[in-house]
Amino acid sequence: MNCLLCDQKLAATPSWQSLLAIEKSSLICEECSKRFERADIKEEGDPIDQVTSIYTYNEPMRDYLHQYKFLQDVALAGVFANELRSELAKKDAIIVPIPMHPQKKIERTFAHVEELLRAARIPFEDLLIKTNTEVMGEKTREERLAMRPLFAIKPGSDIRNTTYILVDDIYTTGTTLRHAATVLKAAGARRVEAVTLIRAER
Image 1: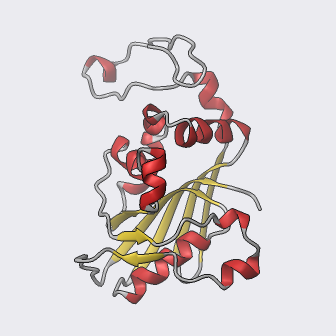
Image 2 (image 1 turned 135 degrees about the vertical axis):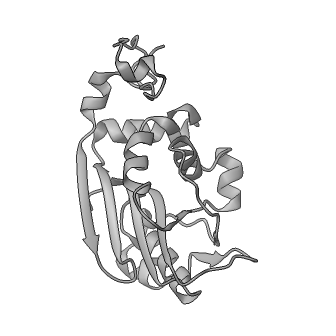
Image 3 (image 1 turned 180 degrees about the vertical axis):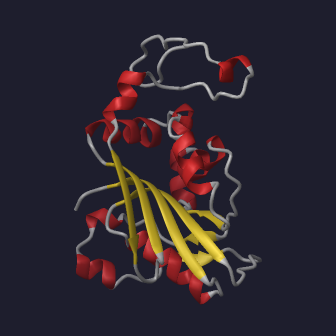
């Protein structure tokens, strides 16, 4: 098997885990893996009670995200499965992916956040609907503050008095997550946290 990023042959290193078939095979080589930088940021606030971001948005991560999202290389969904699983599996909460607008999903052919969670074997509930296609990173702070709600609760969804964790690929301005958290809390959620794979510097 070759690395999904650089196409170099992956070195097979036998271990007792692999012999027992409990070790998840790596999708990228060690050299590519070393190029990603951990951020391990945790912040508390309102309306999002806690935000956790795992990696920084360096050049290798930009290349990865471009290949995954925009070149539609869905096989890359599993590259960070272990990291997402270790962050989310320990939490007693309902996992909610940030959805794409239906039109965007048609254009991109797959829901990239949902695929990240499927690759990590994390159960999730599809509770939100994206109501517009605007890109937050292209707006000024004033424009973001003046925006209408970006999300609505999916019809028929039962929002309980418990903890929800929003999951998104990248945290840029925080507007997307704040809008989603506000809608969930207004519908009855007691606590809303968020986990993002990447934290972009503004």
